[in-house]
Every structure is written in C-alpha cells, then in structure tokens.
Amino acid sequence: MIYDVVVVGSGFSAIATVCNLIELLPASSAIAVIGDDPGFGRGTAYRTELYLHRLNVPAARMSLFPDRPDAFVQWLSEHDRSLSAGDFASRNDYGLYVRDTLASLLRNRKSRCRVDFIKAKATGCMEQYRSSLAFFLDNGDEIAARSVVLCLGVGNAKLPVDLGHLSAAARTRVVKNPWRLSWLHKVGAKDRVCILGSGLTMIDQVLALSAHGFEGQVDVLSRRGLAPHGHSRNPHHAASIDIAALPTRMSKLLRSLRDESRKTGDWRDVMDGLRPQTQALWQRLDKSERARFLRHALPWWNIHRHRVGPEVFQRFQDLVHDGKVVLHAGYLQEIEETNDGLRLRYRARGRKDVLSLDADWVVNCTGMERAGIDHSPLLREMLRQKLISADPLRLGIAVDGQSRVSRSGEEKGVQIHAVGALTAGQFWEITAVPDIRVQARQVAQVLAGASPPVSDARQF
Ligand SMILES: Cc1cc2nc3c(=O)[nH]c(=O)nc-3n(C[C@H](O)[C@H](O)[C@H](O)COP(=O)(O)OP(=O)(O)OC[C@H]3O[C@@H](n4cnc5c(N)ncnc54)[C@H](O)[C@@H]3O)c2cc1C
Image 1 (tube, rainbow, N blue to C red):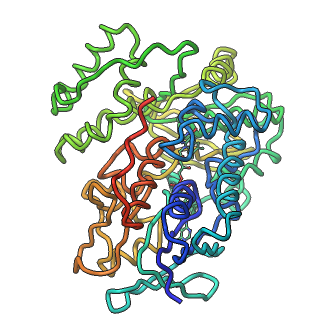
Image 2 (image 1 turned 180 degrees about the vertical axis):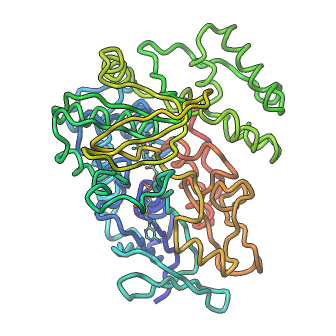
C-alpha cells in the first residue's frame, strides 16, 4: 500500500506531527511512522530516568499543542505532581506526557486515521513516477508515501580529535555518547573525569555523576569555558522589543540588545522578549550576517538563551564553588594514553602554551551536532538524488517558510516537509518544544489541506 503520509523519525518532532495529523486528517487516511527509537516520542531529550534531569522550559510552555497551552500543566496535576505552571518538571515526566497524549489519540479508533508505527531505520529511498517516495528500511521492508515529513533530529557531535592511536582499553574510557547513562555505573567514586563541552549536556552529566555518588573532581574543557546561565527564580516581565527597529548588522544588533539590557536592568527580560520573535529576527538577517552570528556570537547566545532552571543552576554553581567542577577554556589538541589513564593536551584560550589534564574518563558533551546532513545516511542519499538541498550555512536542509523542503533537482514530485532542528537554516530557533509544536501543527495543517495556520502561541 501507499501511505498518505510517512513520518520519518521517532522523537518529539515526529510525535508532535503525528498527534496533529491524527486530529486533522480524515479517518480514511493512513500514516506510517518510521523510527529506530524504542520509546517513540522520547528521543534523546525525554528518555532520561533521572529526576534531576529537568526541563529547561517552564511547564506552562511545554504543552504539545500551541492552541491548548495548559495541557502539560493539567497532566502534571492529574498525575499528582505538585508542580505549577512556572516550575521546571522532570524530562522523564515530559516523555510520559507525550506518550500518554499520543496513546489517548490512538485509543479513539473509530474516528481517527490509520497509524502504523514501524520500528526500523530508513536507510535509503527512491521516488516513483514523482507520485510516491519509497523508503528502504534496515529490516528489509519498503514503505511508500505520497507525502513525507522528515523529523530526524540531529546526530551527536563527533569528538574533536582522533582516537585511532589509543589502545582498545583506553578507548573504552572515552564516552562518546553520554546519553547512554550506563557509563555512570563504571565510574569509581574518586575517578578523574574530564568532560568536553560546557553546555546543557555537561550540566546533565555532572548532576548525574553526583547523583551516582561521585566524589571526585570533574574538569570541564570547552573553547571558551562558558557554562549556561540559570533562569531567574522571580522572572520579571519580558521586555517589549520591536524587532523591526533593530539593526540587521550583527555588531550593531548586539550593541542595541546590550543597551536594552542596561535599560531594563536584567538581560533575561530582553532575551525573554526576543524569544518569541527570534525566528522573525533571523529571517531579517542576510546570509553574511547569519554567518557572522554563527562565527562570533553563538557561544554567548547559547549560554544566555539556553538557560537551566534555578534549582539545577544552584546545584551546579555549588559544585563549582566547592571546586568539584573546574571549567577550563581551550582547544583540545590530542588525547594520549598514559600509564594510569588518559592525558588531554589543550591550548589554553588566549595563550600559546599547551596545558594538560589527566583523566580516567573523558566524556563527549560537545552536544548535539549542529543540524547537518553528514550524520545521516538517509539525508546523504536524498541529497544525492536531489530530493533535498543543503542549507547554505550548513544548518540542516533548505526549507521554505512553510517547512517545505527545497529540492535541488526537479521541483515537482512528492511533497516533503521537515520538522525540528533540521530546518534551523530557515528558522534558527527551532530546537525547543515551544517552536517545534507550532511547526508540527502548521505542517499537519498543510498536509490536511486545512487552513488557516495556527496562531503562533510561543508567546506566554
Ligand atoms: C538533553 C536535552 C534536553 C532538552 N530539554 C529541552 C527542554 O527542556 N525543553 C525544550 O523545549 N526542549 C528541550 N530540548 C530540545 C529537544 O531537542 C526537543 O524538544 C526535541 O526533543 C527534539 O526532537 P526531535 O524529534 O526533533 O529530535 P530527536 O529527539 O533527536 O529525535 C529524532 C529521532 O529520529 C530518529 N531517526 C534519525 N534518523 C532516522 C532514520 N533514518 N530512520 C528512522 N529514524 C531516524 C532518531 O533515532 C531519533 O529517535 C532538549 C534536548 C536535549 C538533547
């Protein structure tokens, strides 16, 4: 059979798209969801079982549906979680909420469309007579679709150095994918741990180590040694920012945001005012200014924009204060083996000399890969067949303002959309739930031929 829509991926973007499709497509339609993740909907973000791994967005902004903003807060209260709208719930609970929401839509068998979940990875594809696209799965099956939604997320960032020269034993001491939390059980309470990368993933891993009774020191190495800020315990009102009045040259733009922060007295108010308008602001910048932003401002943007909840922030700060976590700024040059572990050589930021850190474990927390194509054999194949084209700044794949994939070849053919971080070139701010849920709704509306688009409910 040929499905009306095939959704490729099994993380939040895929499930948000499927939930909306179930609501909008006629009962006669058929959807298939192809995903290699056993916990459909959880992805890397919401699979964790550690209660300390919290959302970094307050519960009030985490509903799956932009037009029903209270849904997650309601779920929390129905499940006896004593949390309110402004609290930062656990990511595990969020995964359960997504699962429950999907399950309740699926229970309504009589009036909904058919939905088949296929546990497999799509490894290749082929367009047939420009009217359907067949995906080849790693289990040997083939699935064809009239329309496709790509929800592949982004891959884990690769280690910045080669490990080919290390012995097999030494290589087991390098944790390439910290999301598989099993590595924590192997770490001795007083081992030396060095984490590469100083973003949200690093904070997650530091807290996970501490929850596992780790008592040693964690060295954190990143190019600038900058760690995320925390949300305020008493958030003020978001500043009102007129983005049409903001300059579009990066240096002037940053200066005017700094001026605004001085005026309001708290830069968080400015970031919060900018937050619902970031996509529109990004779209006003030309390619060279976007490239300038990526080259110079990105690390600062990340720590101000991607903040952690106040409780998590305080725990992390306490560890830094007690010397249990030490941040280093520098460029990793190599990892070598020593008699009793690993040695990381790095060029300290702003200096010429090479320093070293000794460790029993090296953990790659350089985060998610910047949305690209290289990590995915499927996307590479689609690029080869000119079914997709790459974003010019290598921020995933090129899509239009409706998330419709721009082909590099013949424009006619099967409709392909993308949802999530793969569309960062067009939207930039498209990694978190408040943005993805709006995009998922809009794509489902286009596929269902429904209009008008949902109102943008990112603003709270
Ligand atoms: C640790 C962490 C914490 C976060 N916390 C928050 C938060 O608090 N609030 C918030 O709003 N956002 C948060 N985010 C952002 C988060 O990325 C998004 O909310 C969302 O989970 C992204 O989902 P996704 O489906 O786009 O990508 P992913 O979750 O990466 O899912 C993509 C899925 O597609 C599958 N896939 C890839 N290729 C194929 C293929 N060829 N065939 C089949 N399947 C394939 C992958 O295996 C994966 O399961 C967090 C992210 C992380 C990593």
